[in-house]
Length: 351
Image 1 (cartoon, rainbow, N blue to C red):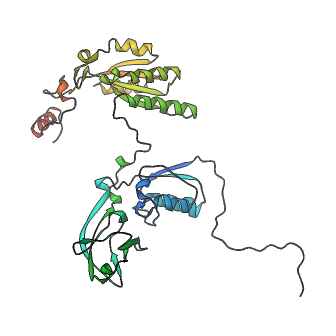
Image 2 (image 1 turned 90 degrees about the vertical axis):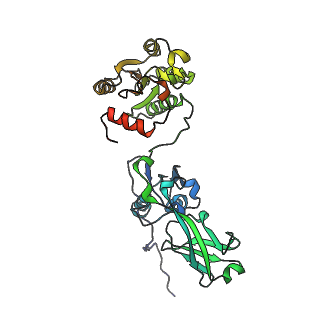
Image 3 (image 1 turned 180 degrees about the vertical axis):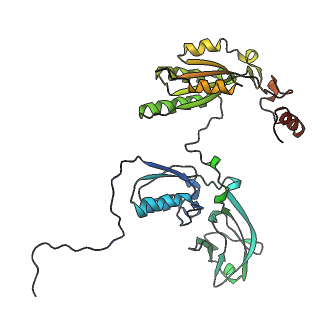
């Protein structure tokens, strides 16, 4: 038998795509994903997922060819099945804990065929399945196992003898509702716990400083209440803004002189607020907070290099509504229907 000598090349088709070199930054993609197909649906909500492959993406947020309902999947397909771009960051905003993002499927009778129930509901969260044989509730793992089929339905495979002998079972569940997601659900960032007053300004300072460190031409704006400025954390943030020369930061203070417990002067006087802001290094703009032209002019005023901007907007609480103007009681109080109608009439709006 003759042997070939030397080096020879052959080509064999594979599923791999040719790598390409790009100059773009890391993609951070917000959208909806079929998290009912993910390994851990609860961990896939409003949490950035760094993925390097199609397999990792499917495990993290699930995958479906239904790009209209599950928008993240189009990016997954484009990045890993077409262009071979990695890594990417995926953020799913479809949240089963929000009532508008789910559909409650009422209990219905389903036939048992050869020990299997085909439950014809889409986007079912398997941990919400309630399967009953008469009045007895079946237990997942011991009485049945459930899995999603390729057509979107759920196959419930019965394990226990009693369940297999039943001619029908009652099934209810919760399904994802992608159409319930609105633009308001796409925050484009990370949620922060700001239940206590004063924390928002510190976060804004951190964002502005981060942008400076990364060399980004980013402007950060934060809105404060005058009563909120009684918090010590506010003044720590002000000091940091001046120390780090955050001229990409603008704070806007709604200065109406009232807070939930009464007037600022009665609760804890802020003293000469303009002088204090200047002393803390701010480029100060005092305006009528009800004058839209003045607001626009202050926001658009040229930046003073190295100095954060402060806009002290003098306002009247409840402006334009006769029974609300200057009344601290309306700081956090719900308005009854009749008074709401009066307020809208006085403001020239429609009820």
